[in-house]
Image 1: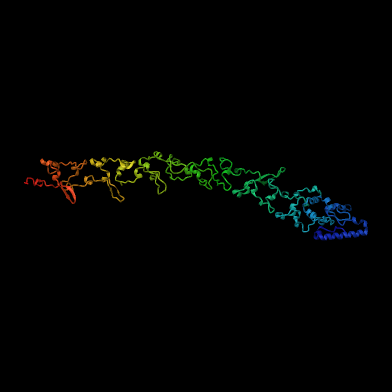
Image 2: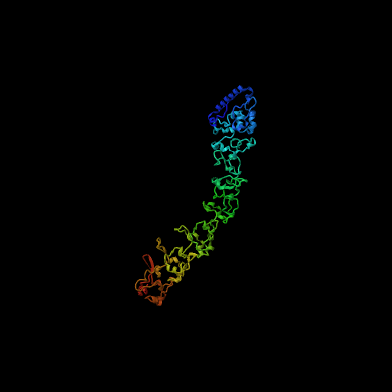
Length: 577
C-alpha cells in the first residue's frame, strides 16, 4: 500500500495515535506481501515514503543510516546527522536535553517518519502556540508570553551558528540557535553604554519604565530636587551611526560619559565663576535657593558682610524667588526703609546713611556735637546737655522723628512762657534779646532800656519782687512783665495811709523820696509845706511836731493835717510849775 493518497489536510484531521496505527497496518500489509513473495526480500522494502526533509534517504540502501540491523530507529543514528541536537544535549541545555537527556525519550517518539513526503516531522501535541516553553529552559514571562513563536524564532535572531554543526538546517524553520540574552533579539538601545544584562533595569513586563533601575547604584546618586527632574533633562537624545560599518543614523539616550563632577556641567553658573567651581560649598540639592548655613564666604562678593550684617539670615536679603545676583546695595535704602522719610534726601552731604550710622548698629548715631556744628543750628550752651530726642521728637502723623525744621528760632522748640508779652521784641530780636543758651534764667536784659530804668536801691531788688507770677493755676499763668504800674504805690505800700494822695494837693512819692533810699528825703519844708521852718523850728525833730499814731492796728506818722497854730504845740509853755 502506498501513501500517495494521504494529503496534508487529511493528516491534520487525524490524531497522532491514528497515524501510528496506520503505520502499523501498513507495515503488516507489507510484511504479508513479502511473505508471499520470498523471505529474503522482506526486510528491504520501505513501509512508506519519508518526509521531505529525509527524502534524500529513500532507497533500500539507506535504511541503516537511521535503523539498526535487526532493530528499529536508533537515536545514535539520528545524532550522526543532527549533530546540533547532540551538542545541545551534551551541553545540558535546551528542550532536547530535557526530553531526551533527562526523560530518556527516543527521537521517533516525537519525530515519526515514513508517513509521506508532506508529513511534518515535528509533533506538537497541544499545538505549536501552546508549547510548554519552560521545557527549553527559557520561561516566557510578561510580554514574551504574548509573542508569536516566529516573532522570536527567525533567522536574524539566531545567535549560535548552528549551520556550522549542520549545514542542512533551514534557518527559516529551525527553533534552534537563539541566545538567552536580551540583545539576541532586541537591539541594544543603549549602544553598549550599560551592562548587557538588561534585567538589571528592565523587566519582562515592558521595556518602560525601567522598573529595576535604581539611580542610587549609579555614580551620580539622586538626592533632593534631582529626584523630581525628568530623566531627559540630564540624559539627552543623541543621533549617530548605528555602528562603525553603518551609514544609517539612529537616536539613543546618552547614559554614560555625562559630566557631573561640577554642577555647572548641567546648570548655568549664575555667578560667572566669581565663587569658583565647587557649587556644593554653598548649595545643596534640596533647594538651590537655600544656602548651607555658615559655609558661604560672603567676602568673595562685592558686598562683604560686616558688623550686624554678618548675623542677618540670608533669607532677609535673598528672599525666596528673589535672584541672588543683581541686587542693589550701593545705598542702605536699597535694603532698609528710610526711617527719616526723605528728610535728608535734599542734602548730598547728609543724604547717605553712612553720614550718621554704621554697620555695627543703628544707635547710637555717629552724628555728634562736631557734626551738629556744621548744620544750620550748631549746639552750644545748655543745648549741649539736652538729649537728641528732646528736640527731635517723634511726630504723631508719621511715627518718625523730626530732623528737618522750618523754624529754628527759640519758639520753634520752646513755649513762649511770657504768653506774648514781648511779641514785638521777639519779632525783631528774638528771645536772644534777653536770654542766652547758657541758661534760661540768666538774662542780659538792660532794664534801663525799659520804660522804668532801675536807679538807686531798685538795682538791688530781684526781678521777682516786682515781676510776680499771676493767674496761677490757669492756662494764662505767667510772670507779669507788662503792663506794669510805673508809680511807687504800684509796688510799695503807702505808709502814709493816703495823707499825700487825697485832696486837691496830691503829691507823688518821688516829690519827697528818691530811689537812693527811702529815708533820704527830697522834701523841703519851706517850699513843699504850708509851714516854713524858721528860727528855733529848724532844730526841732520831725517827730516833735509829727506825732506817731495808730489807726486800725496800723502805726504811722501824722503829717497831714497838722494844726499850724503855735498853741497846738506850745500850749503849756510859760506856765508856772
